[in-house]
Length: 272
Image (tube, rainbow, N blue to C red):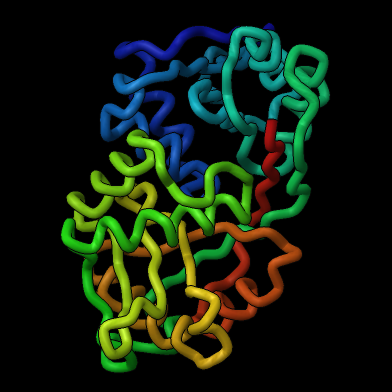
């Protein structure tokens, strides 16, 4: 029989090797392990199959992220759900659905379920735009007061929450991403027209998030040109880029496909 065990320094390399097999599915948790992110909160379990090889991984923190194909692994991970205080469960659709089938009795009723969230990936040969198409740049600390409410409105529209970003924690997270040089924006005559940021990165890929066009700037092609230009810069640093999107957000899906992103998987998210 397989078994679940806590993540430790002794099994971290095996866990990373397992996660690296699916770089777009597992970019977030792989980044957590490689960057020391687990030290900032949360814990992880590793699943070993009958041959003692790592065949599953699950992170428990602000979000639960199950990564496994083995039904027994997902059932074992779900047994720890009662002690979790996560706001959501997110990950590859089969893993999320398998985990939820065992954990639902131990967790609050969901406020929303995003059943299908296509995962998209981009390699440089597929990119249809370049940095010459828009004068994009990295956000600076001086722009924090403007960026925070825009970011909060984007997140509130996706999963709920305070649309003003008034909490110190939210402001602090945004400031840290800007400080890390992971937040990009595009301005037209000084006015914010588009923004997005890198949320996590591994040696194989960087995952984009926070894609947002202020409502008055929509429908004018700004997002297409700006995202294409940002991707051109990011592909200097990362071999590939990836992201995921709600299937019903047809405008965003069309944007990503215009830029050159191609379908690479499917996520689901259960918002608690």
